[in-house]
Length: 102
Image (cartoon, rainbow, N blue to C red; front, top):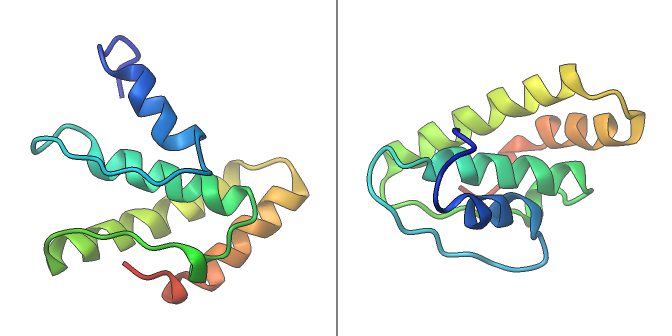
């Protein structure tokens, strides 16, 4: 994502403000899935178990794509993470991915 976007503050809130729910409505190709996956990764890093994460999309195809991207980003985050506690949270998330309701 480009850092010069006019709505960057709102995009950052999606990933960093984890104690609130958000409805994200935007056009195709605007980064909704990217933002949602980034938020889900942040939740897992902060100790939220996959069974407590719900992501709602409009189609099964979109849900499948979201699950695939979430798994890939979990795997990438595990490889990149230096903090052992956060890495353990990410590993737990990956191992319990099927309990995430998408």
